Image (cartoon, rainbow, N blue to C red; front, side, top):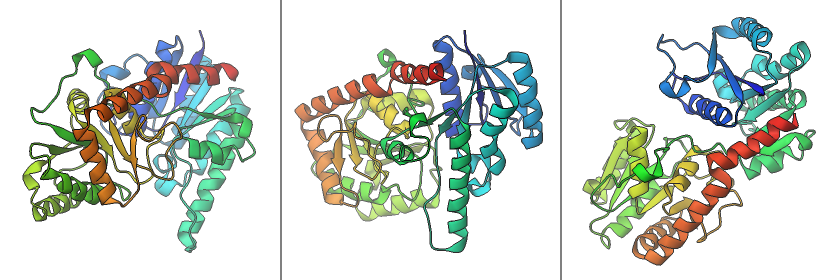
Length: 380
């Protein structure tokens, strides 16, 4: 039985995308008959890991100096066959400046002779002509270069990044594995519609690229033709934030304030039920649907139609009107038409539902991701 040591910045009880994904990886690997240990930074709170994280051997460190000491001790005790390094630049250092973290794969390979698989959740920020952003982008790329040269394999999550890295020095090392179904994991047979009225769901976090104004305006265009339908907003955001208050004012100006349900963060059971009972789940992040977003996997798992902006990172797996309904960015009329068609056309809904379930099974399911992850581990 092979031993995998997962090296990460965050783990439960801290809750963020990286910690949730680390627990997801741990559970998947355990299902694949691997022995799993985790090294993570100690949380400020003294609470224990969550119930879903209890199966791993968890080793805590405080700061980089302690990380080196803890890692050496765990390597001597457990003798791992491979290290899975969870890399997100801005989580390892302020503004993503993390030179020490980028040197970890090299140190591990030279000092302990253990192969490192780097799971690259993010790569770098875009270039800029301004001095400080330019230096930041350069620093990110130098860090990625260091990780790429010293890691045995590199895992990325979508086609755009796959094409980018396969043009580099390490094209033979690059594997594409979607981030996976981290949230909305309630068993299918236990799911039930959460609301009694028909509704469309948006699930996500607030970012600059989220076209929420466009979504609310498009929804207003169909509200008169669909008098019972609601728009439900759920996810990791503060319901009283300025962004949400601005959305409420916009909805009020459009006369649909009572038709917008702003829930914010909900537990996984409610999330699963809400996505399952929705007429359609909407993705309005301008980069487009791709494997780097766990939200997309949760949408596919729900088996309901997905309406999404067709962006620069849209994976080729997503085919218009086959397993998703794609619309152009910043086109409120097209988004409104898509929502109206999907809600009114049961035949189109069934076709999109079938396509979503098929894509989930083939590419985004636990089974599919574990199969790809096992291939990477066995290759090293």
